[in-house]
Image (cartoon, rainbow, N blue to C red):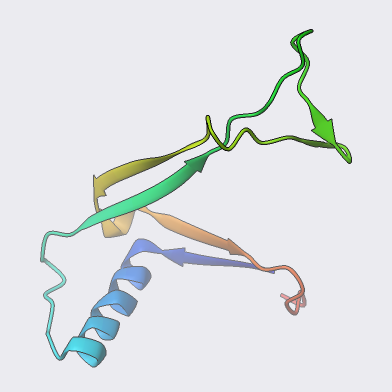
Amino acid sequence: MVIHLDGWEIGDAVRAYIKKKYGVEVSPDAESWVSINQYKAAYKYNKSGSMKKKKGFPVVDEEKSSTVKHTFRYPEGNMTYEFYLEGANDED
């Protein structure tokens, strides 16, 4: 199942959550920013230059892997979020 949510729908949900949890009303015009921490996996390689694999999957080099932080202004109308849900009802 795939669920598509536009940025304004996410914005409405976030404002409703903040109002419910913190009792604060946030204007839809308030400037907001999003920070995403993205895991960047680095992989182990053999001396020949080919990627090491275990059970058919690349072996992750945890020492060389890192997290990259992306921060950007939240333009509600210009974003679409897609959630892919395995095992959910796929009748749609």
